Image 1 (cartoon, one colour):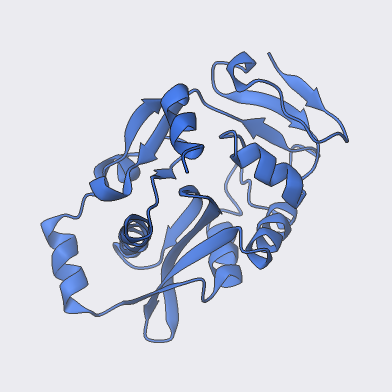
Image 2 (image 1 turned 90 degrees about the vertical axis):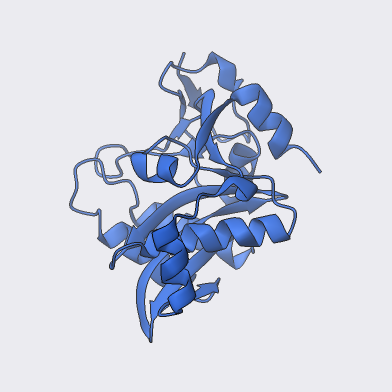
Length: 214
């Protein structure tokens, strides 16, 4: 079932959504609505050229990485130990999100348009969205960003301009979360890349228990 949102701040029961996770259409990308959405595992994802209202998804089969289970291959350990790249946290959020957008902006179904960039930049200003940056000297070569609520991190997008830069960012994120009591990284959907880094499926029920854990 697909629900139409209005100006009220609400979301329907995620278990009533479509099989692919599509739950609702409409509403806005305000901070309050985004926080409410993520606190229930709901996120906006839509082709900004095709739709003039946000589409909201909540897959019941969740793909996550537990920080303690991040897979660091031998080649990645070697790369990390070489120390060629520097990794920072929240040093260049706007550059990261714009790079994530630019690399996909001409693809069919591109979703990271001006409204989404503005919304997540405001979340970052409120310290609710965060970025990880990978640097080769002064050049930004990789990174990721997402939303953090309590002990959960909801990953949104990542990029690499050199091999393995996004892996470095993800490993740094997982290690930072583990050191600070973080319980999960929400990957939204399975990809081969994320599966190779330790991602696995859990039920929505288990997912929500972790998201709500304190």
